[in-house]
Image (cartoon, rainbow over all chains, first blue to last red; front, side, top):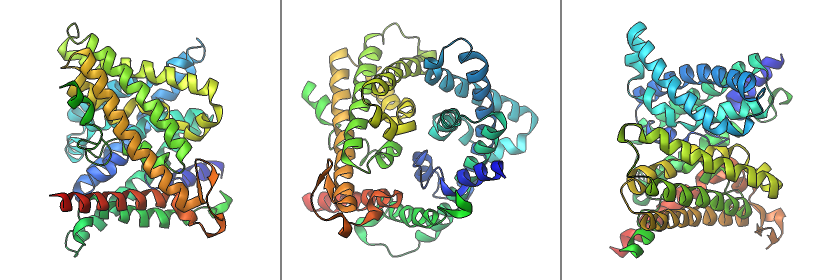
Length: 192
Length: 195
């Protein structure tokens, strides 16, 4: 039940894109088509789960025993960058279909702040290993839900008559505002 | 020439409103003016210092591994500002939360390192950093002020009118999207008129 609470809070209530405003560059950048947003979501789910496991282990097994917590920013970002390279090599060799589905989004993910944010947040919340795994799974599912829904809306919006000054990014922001308002409605569900 | 390097980040190439980078901290910490100011100062410190160091060592930096070097330099300054804020402004640090360490992946900083500081002399790079920080601060603080006035009826914590008539939605997450959407539309309209 506690794990379910962590998952649900990360998935809907504190949705990383619409409520916490992390990784917005990719939210507006790749959501113009459904295909690209699906590729990005797959890549985020895959990388986020692995990298939060590795960064949790590095923090608690190396940085804490040696009192090097102040190095966490540098350590995490380098770990994630190296990990993404490894994952790319592995997928290319072992699961080429998945590799093709993710396309160019896999390398781009290094600069996706959601990955780094989840590593930091799991430590700030003092989660143990299992909790932080469930947390990162919840966050990445929430990311996928929000970006795919947004891509569906934007594809339809391409055909809608939009006031001249609002074309392009302004209307995308207003759409995101309405989605964010809807997600705000999950607050307080299950007493969270 | 130097003036141009400083100038262009403010309006013409404003990082947030024009180049659409650095959006996450802009939207997340602009719920009131004080947080927006604190975030702007932290970003300005990191951007100016990292531009300065990267420009200073640009001739001895091997081309192939420049990105990891940039990241190490940036994360050093982020760690400094992280610990300084934690020590001297604990409330602000609490309010900004995870967005302080996240300055390290702020696209503005790595973007300026790659696009400007790596190719230009020290003084120009410092001025470029200052101009870009000012542009970022301008967007961030104007959003913060607008959201605080509309959402809480205060500005920098001073009461302007009865908070009971304020639109609370403006300080909640959806308000950030509405504010920046309308601001961009207004900028489009303004620019069209000037042309």
